[in-house]
Image: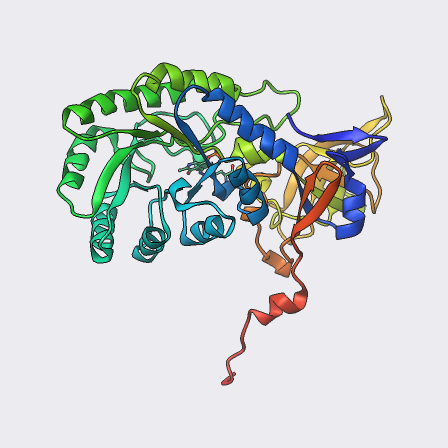
Length: 421
Ligand code: LLP
């Protein structure tokens, strides 16, 4: 459910006209709905009701300070994967005890940053990393709370680039080796085991892989407890998918996902952590863009927009589908025709959609890409020297620019020409 609906013939974000935002801020622009973000946090919170839990928003999906602050104010923690994300979490007011640190390549510098600033736990992914953290914590004279991310060798049945739980993926430690690795941690100074971590992939549309992975985690919890470890927390990762196509079958709901958690690990007396990113932010955002030209090609019409693959890379990177709708509501039953929808970047891959049916559009018209709130702005680049596009947050009847469009002077000022050139 989201809050992007037509009102009075114009697409609105909550009570604000998207056309007004475009007029004020210019296009392209990302627009987020506060009510939708809050609602998605709440559905997870309700899904885990009755179990001690913490929802750690995966900041990689959307790391704007305003978005993090909004979720943090509701009680959310965050899952960070870099020193940069850690700094953003702190800047948005997330206390250290609600920050978990994931990722296969945490540097000693990042470990130091989190250990001095405060951290709930590190999710460790390899033995060399365990040794590094042990050394850094010992140097600082502190104890680092840790889980080990286990790789359960489960097929998440999602796009190959975002599946992480198969043995051939770079993530985690094979679950078969987990007891051995936990025993090693016990002997290392500066580390304290607090639980187990697992994350099998993103945009999962079936609960079966989650169930399979969580059953393995439950069995491992028993085994590790037998070995004398205190397992008090289970970090079950993120990954629940969202509906991108309106007419397609919707993925399972958070409440059904919560039921899988209850059935598999609910009786272990552990605090449950989850790390959803996409489900919280994805359908809470749109990218609004203007038509620059309508170009008649060989047997097809191209709609050339002012946004491109550098602004929203998902279609070119994962062949992802994003619903694209006109900002002016089409009259009921109006005739539609197929367009190839492209950006101005000089690559054929800069194609958002092929033969997409839309009502007739002309230069200057506005369109909105739905489901763009997760892995949209955060994956943008300045390819072709195109400025990163601004982000706007709507809350009921008002909006604010939460990241401004950089000026070209700012962009140029980052480069230096050495004096010997
Ligand atoms: N936890 C960990 C350790 C992760 O690696 C991820 C996502 C998440 C949580 C959040 O997963 P989510 O709930 O958002 O599915 N750029 C890709 C998605 C990459 C996901 C990477 N890891 C895309 O645009 O589809």
